[in-house]
Image 1 (cartoon, rainbow, N blue to C red):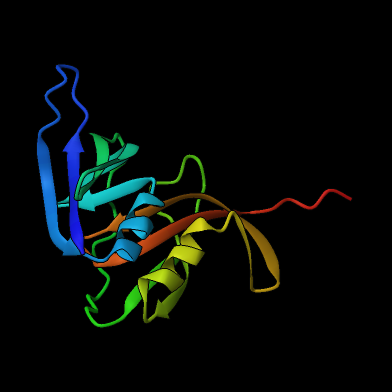
Image 2: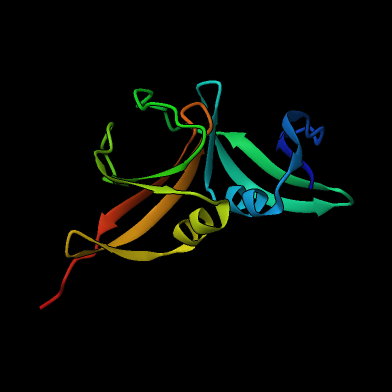
Length: 149
């Protein structure tokens, strides 16, 4: 168990710590590293890079232009939830397609690292992944793969 920090990647090179987690499991750190976005306190951050320091893992983030738009999900603290949402470029709301519930972060990590998956008989491509800590859920945004005949 070790420490994870989210640091702001600022123009002055100060890199202030926004959030930190003590004694966090390394598999959860890997799952967090796999996320393109991090939502905390109603602010969306975009991952810029990840780093390892002695006894500390670091995710460097910048505030994103994205807006968090769905804070309606129930919070489940025992299980790990992964929402699959339909991504559309100009959409303001991304419809929920399906929710997976897993028991361990290593299983969540496998979902987060997939580029493609089959859902409802159709192939989907992941466009990004996010950890929404406000709602205690991982979110995978995906679009259907176009079939060329």
